[in-house]
Image (cartoon, rainbow, N blue to C red; front, side):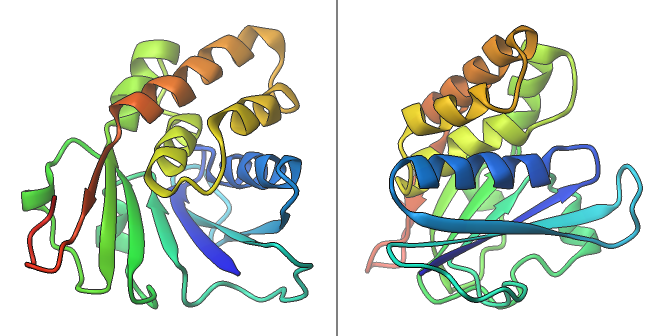
Length: 190
């Protein structure tokens, strides 16, 4: 079973992103589930989306304490939440930000990092800071756990035609622009 924890702020679409990702996984024949965790239910407050998927039915319903993958939609969350808490060995980080890899403090458990400026992609295509669909493209590129065409099919179930085109473009652009790094045996990121 794979587990993903998506960290965002209220209004950034973290929970909707979780639902779209699960829908895409199900389209590919996997068993998947997601659920949210809200602290203070207000715009800008930290929120968490939890995703589990597997080839067999999932019965576990508790929060994800030891994720395989972390998705961080807003770099400011590092000051508000212990993002890395519980990350599994050989973990994956998908981060929205402008910083490059050498500027980040990455725990030893993380072996793969996907970096994308989902904020700029969102602003360029929609004029708003709602990075959720761009982050789905980055998650797809970094992990390969779901195919991009399955994500786009799932978008069609969640967006009206007016918003669909821009969100498809956000997924595609983020997929193309995501830089993926792997920690090699020599201790260097490549």
